[in-house]
Length: 170
Image (cartoon, rainbow, N blue to C red; front, side):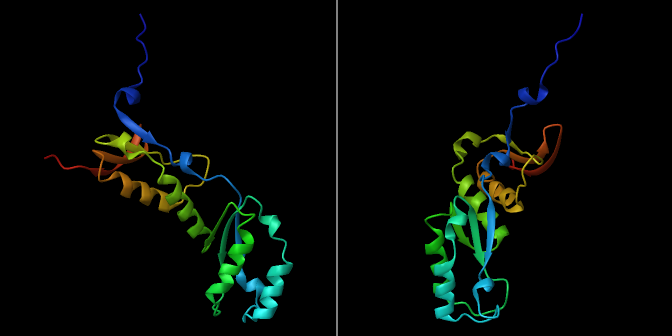
């Protein structure tokens, strides 16, 4: 007589969180303001405004856009603001910073929708591999959100976890 196969992970009471579920879909684009500067060094207002006016901003339709300057130039705040107001009708999201900053922002925003009450006093595993790139900042953010409320936090898969936190017994 064969024994029935049992799912020990399911019976363990562990809760899996897959950060892929919080990944914001969409094409990521980086705009470097240096491309709009005179000799990639100096912002000349008249030329800058003309370049912004001539640019086809509709090419950013539905995209996730990070705006930054990759060179050591003095850029007035209004220049970034002018780019943002031109991008706003088209882009899904616009942030100041590089692509890493964009990923951090998107995960922080997405993780704010997490119903933390579901994890109160639970043992949680944060899945460690998948099909989409998960920015390290997302792992930090989820850890900070969960630590005050869970019994334990682990990283990896149920068959092979790395313990990260265990609430002290009272």
